[in-house]
Amino acid sequence: MLNYGIYAKWDQESKDVPQIVKITTEIPARPGLEFGYILQIKKGKNKKIQFCIDHPPFLNSKGEPAPPFVGEEFIRTNDFQFFLGDSVWQPVADKIGIWRLTCEIDNQNVADKSFEIFATA
Image: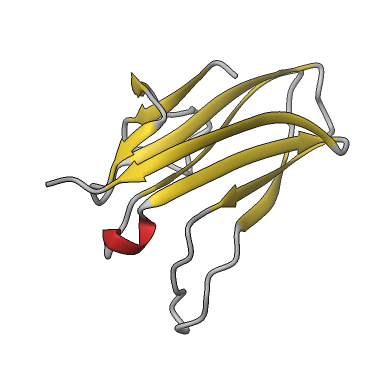
């Protein structure tokens, strides 16, 4: 893990990872604020990284409890940077709590970090 915390706005279409703004695990509940971590993966070319973002309970667009966000990314090079993160969105009240971000390669945990989203005045 290279760093973790609050990041500048991330362009998901870009190959570049976002820039770190502040190293922290405490994230104020402000809409649009990006948080997460960056991994530096060595010698992982042609493997897949599986990720999970487990979050406090909130409802999805269908009014149902949203499951954890899961997915995978193909590792394209032997020196690969990977950003796993999310941003706070409205309504912020149901996003408050612990967000746990994990990554695995070949069923082996390679990163695990929890962030606390907290209410602001």
